[in-house]
Each structure stands twice: as structure tokens, then as C-alpha cells.
Image (tube, rainbow, N blue to C red):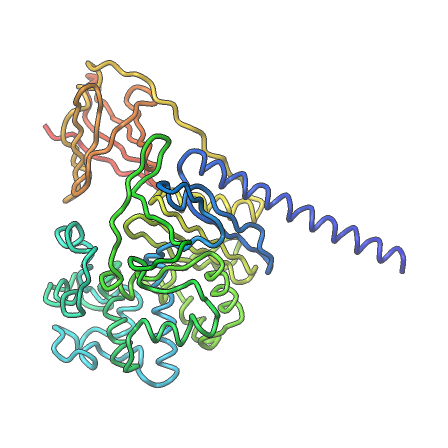
Length: 446
């Protein structure tokens, strides 16, 4: 018996030491990204029912010097969609709607509403125009309250991108429409339904919708970027604009309660959670992206809204939950979550390193000036002024390009690198943009 107790004690000690080592690696990873201004927010990582890390990094608000911590409240963006999808499935369980119901059942005058089902909306296969692609509206109207009629007018009468059910195209319009359908089916405001069905039962007491008007001291300020010598505050998006597609705010702690509820198959039945996790076109289920790691199902979703980038990644079989909430809009969050998974599953990963800018002669910089056609409807204009090279993508503001070496540049406000390509005559003829693990190739317009 004494030998058995000693063995159990030893095993317990080894498990504790491994957990401590994992937590240390996670903290080092997040701290490194924070020191490079590539992560500014709060991170929670859990595995096998134990929280390994729940910690804030960087500033909640630069103006008053407050820093992010485990209580910081962030706007979530499209993580909202998994909650909207769960409410739809709950209403189906209550026989208040069916996934096969047509949109026309709820909005009889919706064009082609008799060919679009609730399930099409859930899976982004409706073909409905994505209203956030309307640049005029996004640039000028997102901070203002908008009625249901206003939002629906942005996509209702637009031609469908394709016949419903035949293809996949991410559509915030579809999820806003789901929110309006929920209101019709439940005879209550969408926000109230979310509180009654999910937030209150799970005691998600720091979760809600009207982030712009929230006065809580733990509310974070959203920034377009934060770096060592500057930052830019982002305008708030009104909850009536992002609505059921992206209006939620929350904390890592509340989202962990959500994860725990899902592990226990609460809110809706186990069978319905399995339906939500079943990949359809483009590996998208009902409000979840579906993938795998180490032969196990991985479900998750990202969010992006003015000033905030977020993600939640779960491996239900191992009770893994990764929640990253960033209030500085840095798109490296996907890469960070991949490195976290590598740490949890003992896979190789690398810590980011600071890029050092070098001086490049103006005569060389002048060779990069021009317009680069990257893909239909998307161009990058490279300009030079007072010795500073800038790149301006279609519909965006110019960003300063810093040279790491000749022909290779980087941005300090996002994890983006650019390489100019040359022909046999050593003339600049193209551009390759590296971002989020992918690349886009363009040609210099003559």
C-alpha cells in the first residue's frame, strides 16, 4: 500500500510539474507577442478541465494607463454567431421554428424568401449579399443606431450571389436575418432571448450587447493598432448594426462558462450540439468552423469588429478551450492560437522575433512606386513621400512600409510582410503579400 501511495504521489507530482511547465510556456508565448505589440488583450487556456492560463496583457485603456486583466470586457464580433445558432436550435426544440422553414414564413415580402431556409442562413449558403461589404455604409454609418428596416435594406433587394444551397459565402447579413427571425418566432427582442436562454442560466454576468454605451470600469477601449510610439482608437460599432452577427461583449471568464456548458451539453440537447458541429460546405457548421487536430475534432470561430479581434477554439474530446480577446485589432491572433495548440499537444512552434528596419536609398525605394493588381477589385498603391514608403490597399488608409532588407518590407501595425519581385532585367514587376500564413501575388501595373 505504501508503495502504491508513493507511486500515486509521484504521478501526481509529475502531472503538476507538466501543467506548470505548460503554463509557463503559454505565458512566455503571450508575453513575447505582447512585447512585440502583436497581442494586447486577455487570454484563457484550459485543458482537461483545468485552467492553465487566464491573464491580461497590455493596455485596457492607454489614456488612463489601465491594463488588461481577467475582468476586462471586450467586444466579441462574430463569436456572437455561435450563440445565435444555439438560440435557433433551442427554438426548434421548442417547436417555434424549423431549420427547414423558409425566410418567407417570417418575412413574406423578402425577395426569393421562399427558396432560402433557416439552415441556409446558419451555414452561410443562402447567397444573400454580405452587408459589411458595403464600404460606404461601413465607413460612415456603423457608429449610428440602425433599425431592422435600415439593415435589411442593405441586402434585401441585392441579387443573390448564387442559388441558395449551392455554394458558400460568409454573410453577416444571414446572421442578422436570423436575429430578426428569432424575434418573430419568440415574440421577444433578440437580446432578451439571449439573456433568458443563455446568459442568465449560465451566470454569464459580464456578457451583453450594447458595448458602445456600456459604462463598466472594466470595459476595454478598442484600437486599430497599438505600437511602441503610437496608437489609434477605433470608433465604436453600434450593437444594432452588428446585431445577431457580432454585437456581443464578454470576458474570458464568461466564455469559459459557455465552454463548460457546451462540454456538459447544456442549453440544447447533445444531438443538436452534434448537428451544430457537423461540417457542411467550407467546413462550416451552425455558427462554428470545424477542423481537427491530433485526430480529434476542433471547433471554433473568430471575430473582428472595429478595434477588436477575438477567437475561441475548442477540442471537446480533451476539454480544451482557448479564448483570445484582443483590443488592438492585430490579426496575428490566429497564429497565436495555433502556437497554443502546439504547446498543448507537444508539437513544434516558434516564438516571434522583432523585425529590425534598415535604411534603403531613395533611388531604390523609387523603384517600388506604382499600382499592384493583386486580385479582381483589390489593388495596392505604393507611394514614396519624404523618404517614407507607404502601401495603400483598396478601401484602406496608407500604411508605412519598413524595409527589413532590400525588396522585403513589413508593417509594424499588423503581422504583414511584402516582397517585391523582379524580372531578368532586375526591374520590379510584382508584389507578394504574406499574411495569416497565406500569400497573395500581384502584378505591377505598367
